[in-house]
Length: 218
Image (cartoon, rainbow, N blue to C red; front, side, top):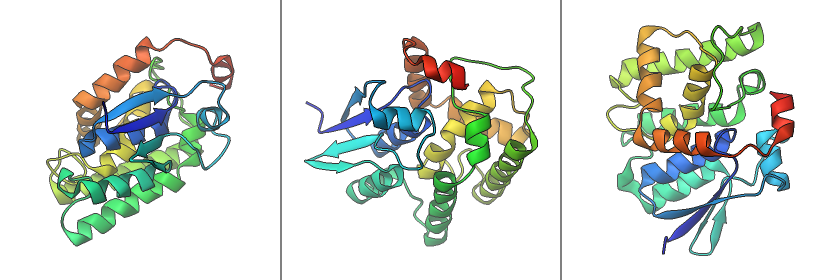
């Protein structure tokens, strides 16, 4: 029996669920996956961007429930410090937390204009100014991190919390055909091709459609 349970929303649409799931995978946690019903209020809040605070993903471990994505990461980093969720050097840890926090609280224009939908592909998608400003900031973050670490991940050879936080952005960039400079495009491919990401994407493509409201919204 798995030692923990992670409750998630839709794999096709749930960007925060993807982040929490990747964090658990990167930590090496043995967990059982449970998908919340589409009519669950917290699930709909995440998928329809109705609230800045969601109750999914939710990790249950040894009787403790943790539902904020960054809280899940900090909890698992304490349990599995050698897993590398946070970089070892102090300055790199601080920067990792900073850019993870920026994703956690920002980029609202990108979220609303380019919602995660892994089954879709929109070649030549027109990105308007508000979302483009978010994209420019994200690319600047990636550029600086990759230059400092040497890649292929934001903080070096191993994927960490920052990569999990920006993984849904990589998926969005593929879906909406966002043009990137070569180094950032290579980073995006690295993340999308991670075995854990490919596992999630396969699950998303196999998921049945039962959220008609999402099709209208998107």
